[in-house]
Length: 248
Image 1: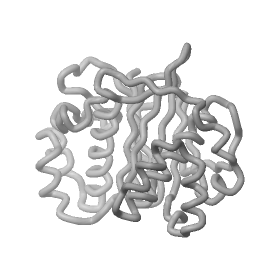
Image 2 (image 1 turned 120 degrees about the vertical axis):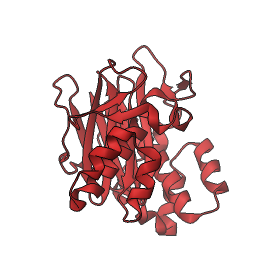
Image 3 (image 1 turned 90 degrees about the vertical axis):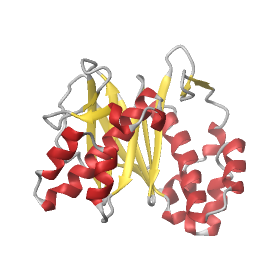
């Protein structure tokens, strides 16, 4: 089972809401937020702390929250009945005003994998992956290792950037697309690579060339382990591309 949560952090531009939200998260993240320089980065860090506490508790069924379904996934994906997923958009104001997250602190104890990736320890470990871009924070939670990424789809010199992070096969596929579809595929590939490298815990140390989109545009493939089965889910939410990766 996979739960996916997204939160728009722009409401935290309100100083009162920001201060109230800050009081609800763990002391360690509070200190981290306070030491950050940029206000937009502070909002994202605060949002990540709130979404993490909310999402973990919601996933475990400890407390219901004020959530609504986000858009259904729109991009091509590999259908898999073995990986059911549900997604939620969490309102920043609603969470801070109606749900006392402070009573949930110190509930979760984190351990770390071989590459330093955190998870919730216990008899039945809970795995999660955080990402942020633009005004949004993304969290994916599962009972299996998981990787998640969100990207704000911007215009720009896509061809120049594509040459640096796509494999030859991906760049060829991308170049053959009509101009109107190139931006969509560009961010599908980018988010998919990021999500996979977060799944393994390697991050950018492994490099973008170690993972590619398969020929059917259905999932990501590890070029070092091409027979390793991976399920990839893609979502669109507003101007953002979301990708979720999990080993099948």
